[in-house]
Length: 119
Image (cartoon, rainbow, N blue to C red; front, side, top):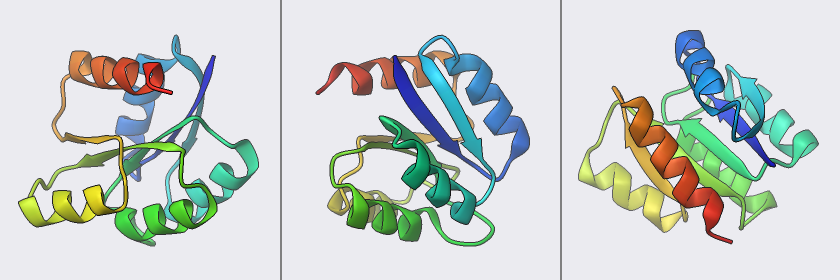
């Protein structure tokens, strides 16, 4: 089973994703970038769902820190913003995909399934 880390400052989003994905594996959640990075180091997840806007660090900055430690962990970005520039910047840092808020549960499940199937 997969180990999935959800990093989002909105508690309602974390709970929704946790409940949606609990059948996919072990779910770990964090509300800040610092907490998320600590859990990433400690738990070594297979997949990270990472919000772009966090209270203490941007999701892009956190992604850069994560990539400095692990180039292969799969990362799905979550954003309320979908400007072309931000997506291009993220693709340069090697993400597995992104989801725009508000999202549909079926869309999240489908993307997670696709990401976890790829080795």
